[in-house]
Length: 211
View 1 (tube, helix red, strand yellow):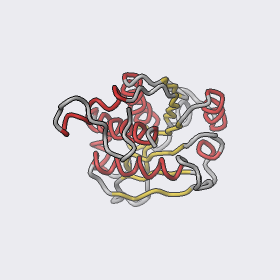
View 2: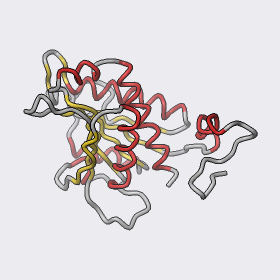
View 3: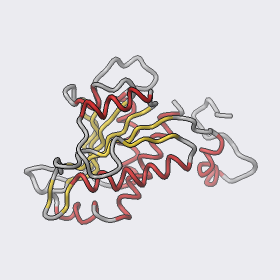
View 4: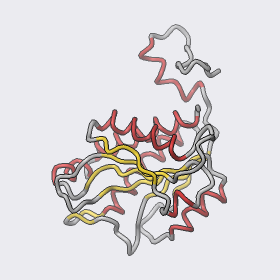
């Protein structure tokens, strides 16, 4: 049973704080999610010292995959190791699987070393759909900012990015922080941050699937 009022369904006589914990038990998530750890192989993505973006992307994706599978979802990753995967191939994988959502995980870089914070990118498409890239981006950005408490750059329409343009389902690219900012990079490499980021993405996926 899922309440249509936007509130979480009441489970037994628990207090309100405990209700959210069991949300996936109330709503069995027989959904297919494709996670796309950006870059890989000969394409490291952003590089800061010895840290390569491709590795951070994969670490967060693996943590998130475990969380989603625990909630009963079928999860595919476009790569589960350090290898090259073409952008069109990534989109093709998701389309072939008829995935419900596509979440591409990246980390940012900027010539401005003071820049830090979060942004989410999406392909601008028709807005009448119940769930689309823009709506998914709004949910993801909101939850990431709430969980990670860092600067909110907002969401950006990007018509030319292959993985969000070629996918047939709601799709976003999340940029989890700036590797070019020394203080932020120190956080990005920690398991604590990676788990928090995965938790926020997990909450976003659950929220989007309930819409």
